[in-house]
Each structure stands twice: as C-alpha cells, then as structure tokens.
Amino acid sequence: MNLARSITLILLCMIMNNTHAQEHRYDPPWNSPPESAVNFTVPGIDNVPDLYGDIVDPQLVVFFAGNQFMVMDDLLAAFKKKYPNYQRIFVETLPPGILAKQIEGGSITIGNMRIDHKPDVYAAGKNRIDSMSAHFSRVETYAFNKLAIMVPKGNPKEIKSIKDLAEPSLKVAMPNPAWEGIGRQIVSVYNRLGGEKLENAIMKEKVASGTTYLTKIHHRESPMRILYQQAEAAPVWYSEVVYQQLLDNPVEMVEIPERDNIRATYKIAEMKNAPRRQAAKDFVDFMQSEDAKAIYKKYGFETP
Image (cartoon, rainbow, N blue to C red):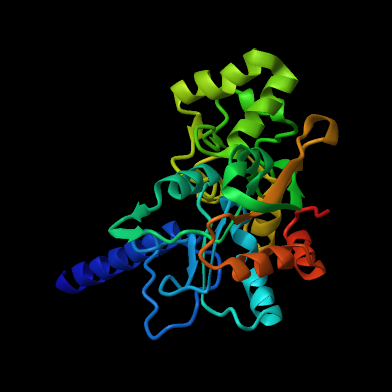
C-alpha cells in the first residue's frame, strides 16, 4: 500500500510539474537574451520581455513602440554590424503611450527597478509622433502596417470578418484603446464597418459580459491568450501573426480586405535633447537603409 501510495504521489507530482510547464510554454521573452554569466529568467515570475540590451552606460538608447518587439534581434545585430562602435545599446518596446509618459516624466518604475534613461531616439505611430513634434529635431518614415485577425490554428470558430467579433459568445482579446494606438485604430474599423452599434457590441456589451478582454498593458497579451486557449479571436497587427507563424506557434491569420483595413505609418525621431546626438543620427540613418527595410519586410511590415 505504501509503495502504491508513493507511486501515486510521484505520478501526481509529474503531472503537476508538466501542467506548470505547459502553462508557460508560449511565454515571452520571445527574443534571444544577450549572453551573460548568469541567465535568470523564470517564466511567469522573473521575465522582462520589453527591455533589451545594456542598461548600464549605454551608447544608444531607443524607445520603440511595443508592436515592433519582434524585429529587435535582427535589427540590433544589423545595426551593430554596420556601426561597430555601438555595442552597448538599451531599448524599450513598451506601449507608445507609456513611453510618451516616460519621456515627459523622465523615468519609469517596473517592479522594483527604476529607469531614468533619456532616449536618443523615439519610434512610434504617425499620430503619436506628430503630437510630440516639439521634442524632435528630425523625423523620418520607415515602415507601414495593417490589421489582421489572429485565430487558433484551424480557425475553429470559422471567423471570416471583423463583424464576426460581435458574436456574443466569442472570446475576443482586444488591445485597450486607453494606451494602445492599435486599439484606437481597431475601434475606427468597427465604426467604419458597423457604426456605433458594432463598436458598442464589442467594446461595451461584450466587455461587460466578459467575452471581450481588454489588454492590461500590452497587446503582446493578445497572441498569448490565443495560444493559451483563453481567446478565440484577436484583432492584431498583421506583423504579429507573421511573427507567431515564424515561431511555428499554432495560429492562423484571417486577412481583412484592404477596403476595410487601415494603413498605419511608423515614424522615427531624433530627440532634441538626445544625450548621444551622433548615435541618434546614426540609428535614424540606419533605419532608412535597405538592410533595415529587409528586416521589417521579413516580419510582415511594408516599407517606403
């Protein structure tokens, strides 16, 4: 009996450990971490996916709108190769509204860590950059994006269009328009296709009933909710579906026709008060290069 009980306990522990591992199998960081003496990343506990590189004495600091986290590995490697003098680079890919507040206030706290780096370069959507023009000495357009609907592999709910997201029982992951530029863009599509009725159905009625989930801080949550079977559809950037498919994760894309879609324009700016002016200029120059454009195209973006 004791042996049987011991075997049962061992099996239960194995099941519990496997379940725990399964819960985090899609967790970020999805990028490749830099090399160091100790790599201490614990999925779901100690995991900071939107801070990159060297936070101490950086030679360049860049704030990128969060939807471009997928390009960072390739982009920074290509920049360092072309400009080998810059090896210590610190990048944040938080939501653009959060980065804007950080620029205005001068610092941000994440967990127990306070960061007060001033960016040399800020990259975000056109509207955000235009609204902050007084901060910049130079602005360039470098990429474009559009919307798509991410669904689980096989598209089990047979989603065909944006209007399907209003189905009362359909679990939708939706970027929060309060701080996510993409959220406001998606809401504009709801209005274009179904007016206030469609917007209210998805953004008020379904939020109240719990079948529309508004992201808490980052639209990175949307693909995670699809992957963990917590959502059945998610309006996202086209590039986000491309990236999840490059990772070979079990998602599919439902394309939105051009007539119903939007075209987001991304701009990059040198800060007027950039602490490292030459580094800012070199990075913005690089973002206009064919090397940078090829990287963005790989991940589903369009370029000028």
